[in-house]
Length: 155
View 1 (cartoon, rainbow, N blue to C red):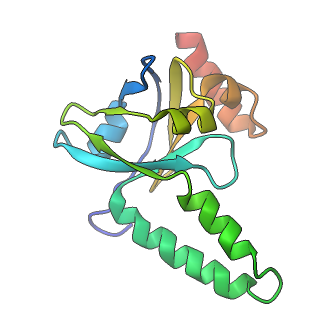
View 2 (cartoon, rainbow, N blue to C red):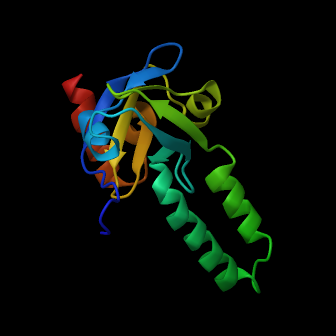
């Protein structure tokens, strides 16, 4: 991993207030801003029914990957590039994060991710997934279901 890039490793369930206010889990706060006010981009996951979050610096990686895929897929699926770009950036919101790690998830993101009163954060390296706990418990990925079950039994 390159110097200066955030690494998200860990998992936690956090409470979500009615208006969408949350306090990011410690593993996210530490990777993102280390106690300094910052920003994070939150959007729809490319394939799973959850949200994904990453620091602004990760946008360059996403744009490079999008261009690489566009070139590779151009002949067989010329419209695929635009569908992929809409999935990645159409729901993306840059959200302010306070020094205490607090932010507000907008209603459109909460609706897209099915986020209610609790959210499961799962570190996946350069990004963090944000799951509705019930969706994670029913996911096709057995390791995600097991992780969600552990957190559900703690609460």
